[in-house]
Amino acid sequence: MDMGLVNMAVNFKQATTMADISTAILAKALDTGRDMGQGMVELIDSAAMERSVNPMVGGNIDVSV
Image 1 (tube, rainbow, N blue to C red):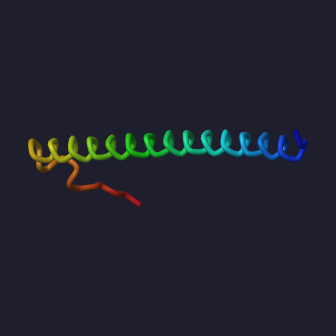
Image 2: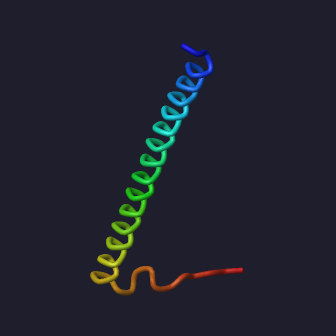
Image 3: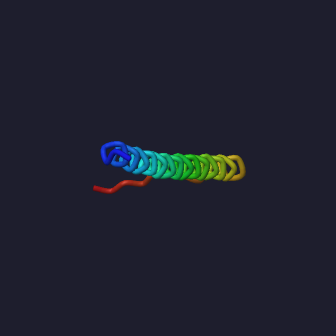
């Protein structure tokens, strides 16, 4: 067997493995982003629920300089 062909096969396998790893990392990052977004939506919903029960809470900010 030609060594050039063997080297090509090894390089192809390494490139395929790196592409698989990159895809897995990207999928994990997308899952994390989705979960964080869902958490933000839940936080906003809970704040809206608090405002519906106590409409005056959080409506004003007292500032002294």
